[in-house]
Image (tube, rainbow, N blue to C red; front, side, top):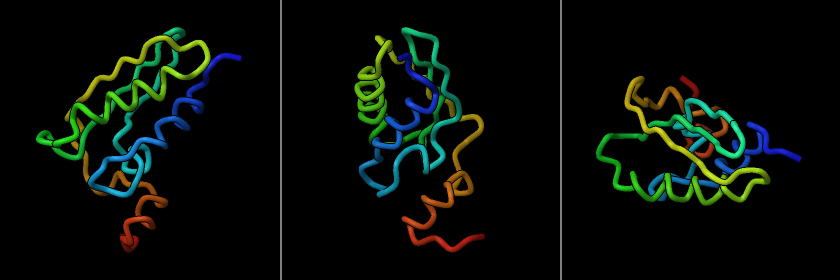
Length: 102
C-alpha cells in the first residue's frame, strides 16, 4: 500500500503549534501536499514570519510523514505569500478556539 495525500493530511493533523490548541491543517497552515514516492512535498506557511516554532513544526511534520509506507523523505517549503490569516482556520479549528462564525 502506498501513501496517499489523505494519509499525509492524517499525519499533519497530529502536529500542533504549541501556542495554539489546533492542529496545523485546521489552522490553515498547509497550502499544498504532493506525494511523489519516496518523497512528500508540502507547501505551508506559518502564522507569522517570526513564529518561534518555525524550526520545530517542520521537524515534527517530517518525522510524522516519514513514518508512512513508501515515504523516505519529506520536503517542506515555507512561504509567506499568500500570508496566513485567521480566515484560513477551518470550521473545526474555529470551534476549538471558541471563535464565532464570521
